[in-house]
Amino acid sequence: MAFSNEFIAPGVTKYSAAKVYKLKGAYKVKAAPKHAKKAAPAAPKAAKFYPAEDAAKPKKSRKAAPKTAKLRASITPGTVLILLAGRFRGRRVVFLKQLASGLLLVTGPHKINGIPIRRVSQAYVIATSTKVDVSNVDVTKFDDAYFKKAAAPKAAKSAEAFFADPKSALSALPASRVADQKAVDKALLATVAKIPNLAKYLAGTFSLTNGQIPHLLKF
View 1 (cartoon, rainbow, N blue to C red):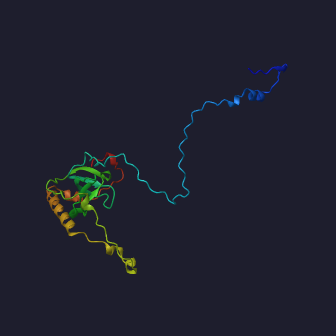
View 2 (spheres, rainbow, N blue to C red):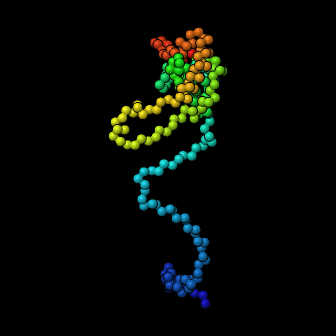
View 3 (tube, rainbow, N blue to C red):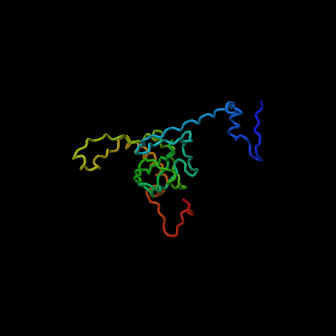
């Protein structure tokens, strides 16, 4: 038997909407199950304590391996260079070869201007037009490991060591280094002696005077 909710007055029904819902038994009809939503992954729980200092994390480098810096075209073995920085700034040296690290191997020679065999960066030198023949100079044994300093042993802490003169703890130059310097100087001095006034040129110091414009000079 169909259920009917007749009007007892204009706009007024016999049963209310809630009563009609109950009489029809609509509450007995089960709704179709809805698709259950997947629960979002829970966020990681924050730590209660943090370290007092940030731990250093190494940055990933996009470079495969360090490459040797390209040598300037004006710098060739035997070129006389002017040092622009360091202990011997303003002095002239002879370029011998480029090392694997990109640094330049130079020397005074030591007999002329007191500059020993050392490494310098090509960013801090001026290449001149003066060249010396270094074909007779043997530089095969010189590399970056040659200039590596040996680790000094740690001395025991004591009152005498604290008040001792730090200069007295400096180690003397090894005899092998002295012999290498003399061998290079001997080969270079033989070539320098053949060119007039070259020894005086290497012993002199580079400087500018008033009115001289550096970028217009021909070195």
